[in-house]
Image (cartoon, rainbow, N blue to C red):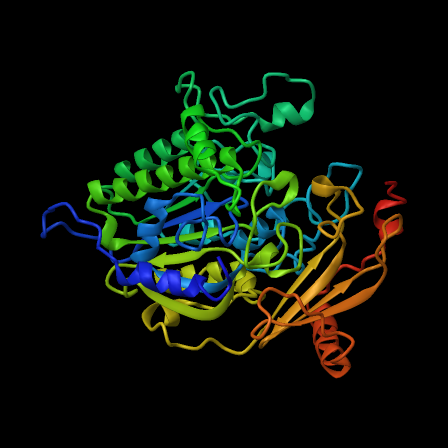
Amino acid sequence: MKKTTIGMVCCLLMAQCTPRQQPEGNDNTQKPKQPNIVFILADDLGFADLSFTGSDLYRTPNIDQLARESMYFTHAHSSHATCQPSRISLITGKTPTRLKAVSHGSLGGVTGPGIEMPAEEVTIGNALQEGGYTTAHIGKWHIGTGDNGPRNRGFDVDIASNDFCCPGSYFYPFKSDTHKNEKDTKAAVPDLEAYSSGEHLTEALSTEAAKFISQQKDSKKPFFLNLWYYAVHTPLQAKEEKVKKYRDLITPEHKHRNATYAALIEHFDEGVGRVLKALDNNNLTENTIVIFMSDNGGALYSNITKNYPLRGGKGMFYEGGTRVPMFVRWPGVVEPGTVSNERVAGWDIYPTLLSITGVKGDANHNKNLDGVDLSPVFKNANAKLPDRSFNWLKFLSLIHYGNTTERTWPGGCIIKDDWKLIEYFNMPNAPNRHHFRLFNLKEDPSEENDLAQSEPEKVEELKQTMYQWRKDVDAPEFDMEKLYGQVSQ
């Protein structure tokens, strides 16, 4: 699908919106004044990984329906191009750079700053818990272990959060068969021992989410469900009948061609459908806000997916690395089938949730929130947010790619108005050296034309703005050898 048609597809799908049928309920049922919140976060789901956003293979009818009932944000960005810093930002409302969360993981000899969420941060779970909400985290955490787990960071309920980035297996008992090392132990997903052979992790998480929702039906307290799926991160595993279905569908003309990944997305879509059905069945839909997004762009390694028409993917500063699907459904407030073209980012979620719930949060923490309240846009798709720049900083991430590809190069990025400037840092033992790349995203959304040489004044303008931002948030200095030593190829 060409870049000029994705918006048309979205509009056509929204125009065909058929509202979800609501079960009959007792009109006299007393509802809490504050809305319930379900925040659904996908892992590594790319911009074009839904049939709604342009996939020519993946089938996502439940998420497509959610999108039609929601406001779709065409220019939503993750907080970082990799998942750990992105999640730290989501849970704190601050840019990863402010929290020194600019590395990703500690494998491959890389340590560096920002591996876990700082202990002093007040999470959105803490804030809503203090504001009278029952809070639950289900699924992937990946931003702290031990005392830094969900139970100690603002969540009354913690189900299936392991100590690693991904599950040992998507099939019961949801752990590796090998148990060779510490990684295998950390990857085992806990709390799901009651399930049985053949069950898929995504199904189990959705079942647990539906149980939690059902338990809130008669509660006088509002609830916040932080549902962070492991899907569609590796290991790519899905039930064989689903894999076979997509394998039979793929032709040489398909852009998306990974049958197992397509099947894993279908598991994910079915899971989201079960969660939405649980809201319907318990007469909770009308007073529940559902926010859906991904933690970063789709992964390109091993031909997992493609983020067309965007350039690049997970780990990269190009749009494919940070542009993600994002929908917000809020019955009675958000007009179904509306679209906002405002640029937003993951760090906006925290202040938005404070605003829409009326929860004050922690005053000291809130002084350094980097996001803005998106609720004016929820109420009016034509509303404009304050002018601002968007900045990212990323150090080395050997954990994904090795150190010779652009996907892992360290650097920084700024988007201001229609312009994006990427700065790549020096990195020993890799072919790149310090340089800049400049793109006009309005005229060149696929970032095919580097204007750094022809627009030196714009490069200088954006560079100074970016450098000032790093100073303002006390960004860590990048020194490859000092931070990591000589990393060999």
